[in-house]
Length: 285
Image (cartoon, rainbow, N blue to C red):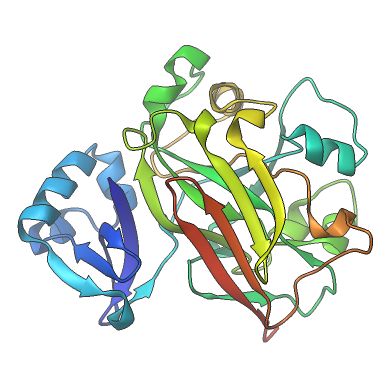
């Protein structure tokens, strides 16, 4: 199952992703009961949504609508830094006993196909292709053995980063939270649709050139470890998003460095999760 969030006729909707150009909007009774995909997830109604949309959903042409971040209103957005050996090496960082965690704000998220705004305040706008996890069932102190049962699904993510702002201090938050710099999508594939994340391959392309390529099996801290760690200090809730880290090949550590500029096309493709594609533009502010 693949689920999508979009705006149609000026109103936020959601439904099934059929392909790049065609979606099935959830029936009116579903939209009335559950205002967004996060609410459907929280109610444990993804299977019911699929059945209802297949039976009586409204066909939507992508050309008539505008995609939204697949989860546009997460309560929490967590990001894991330095979670591939290749990225740890290029950043010249030591191994860590625990995951490196930072956070994003919901308004820093963006959608597949949307303009990706390069902040005026930086000339070092970098890409980071990542696998994102969407929490399905909330909880505290979730064990690794139970972690899979708390996952609703997965999506592609691009952790667009203002590298200079990231390094103003030891805290990374400023460089990671310029508005609209974190595209998430194009859709969410459910955990049932992706039974083994370790077989997934992640590839990031800038203007068609492969910049990053890795297997999700190469994650240093696995998804159960991440979920156990996060839920050890804060409750996880349905719709929360976890970006699990980026592999080596970021633009900042290339010789010479490669940063995104207006007109660039950046794509993050993950097996079974489609291709997240955005065109970079200069931000208005």
